[in-house]
Length: 434
Ligand code: EPU
Image (spheres, protein in one colour):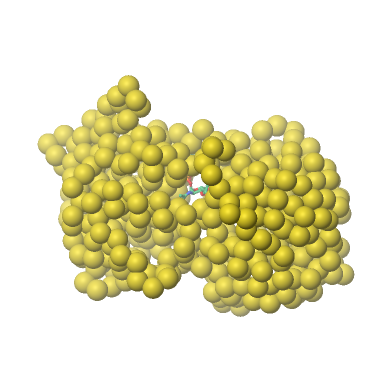
């Protein structure tokens, strides 16, 4: 997103080291799960019902994209969507909307497999890396699609003979959205597809399990090899999909709790999805109790946190999306910590502002930083380079001294539901300025 898109801003009154937050936060559905099941609606003959849908901007963009294609999307109450794709009469993704969200790429496979062609521009999203799409293009070519690109940069993929063919693929990198895209594409392509070296993120497993419930033939769910026997559209026959809790939001509240609360309970979450974070925080000295679907951050006011060496990794390793909030945590830890980012090559853009707030972060190279702590943070006007960095700034603003401003609330609204309501309910003084 460029700075030109008008956005609300947040003003946060810093706690200045006082651990005042307490109460209960309930975690909503995962952004990176719901966007994929919304794209999967294209695989169904009948209407798909999705429950526990978070009200976040990326979901609104996905609704707009589906409606633009001719799908009917109905909202029932706050958190349920009903999607019928019977009326789809277009195979071009609206470029303006798609540009605002990388996840739009997951629509390409289902459209191509069902209608024999798709037009799309290179998807946009956060500026955390070059975000190539080679895995997608190669995969579609392998399944018998011919691709061209016009002067404006729009790709046109067309299946030879109007239908894609099943084709086994070894991904040279485990990519989350490519795994999801080819899983969905293979459900419609006739024959057996074997996908090797796929990503293992819980959102993928959740999507695959639901497709199986609705008649898809998928083996190997939860492993690095998926075998799909495809051949036709699916039917929900009244079954609905319940979006799994957002693990990145869970982890972010856990970090906030460790830094600024004296008793915070995180409910409706799946602690097993953030084991890497939990074990790092425990090693550092954060006291917490964990149940099946809750985490209680205990009073850590007397804890002396130890430094950590973090390396982001594909699931079940340390999630890259929790890297920025973790940096904020490490500014409050005694000693030198390091973070090595292995997924995206440009994801430390937020550290300069943290240094201006008082942190001591040294960049060794675009993928490695060290953090010397503890350091007191002071207020600042901040502009987050991506949605996860935006949330890290919110955490930094909460523990800092003075009033901080987070300029581009839109970024945070892309992925975090009702952020100011949830934060206010546990004691954060945060205001949205329209
Ligand atoms: N890659 C390629 N070629 C491709 C596709 C990916 O080289 O064609 C590379 C990427 O550049 C990266 C690596 O593969 O180095 C893995 O990226 P991946 O494709 O897994 O990322 P993604 O699918 O685009 C999803 C999430 C991200 C999350 C990453 C990693 C969605 C919509 N996005 O992105 O979430 O960081 O997986 O877990 O699911 C976010 O929510 O803020 C976010 C960025």
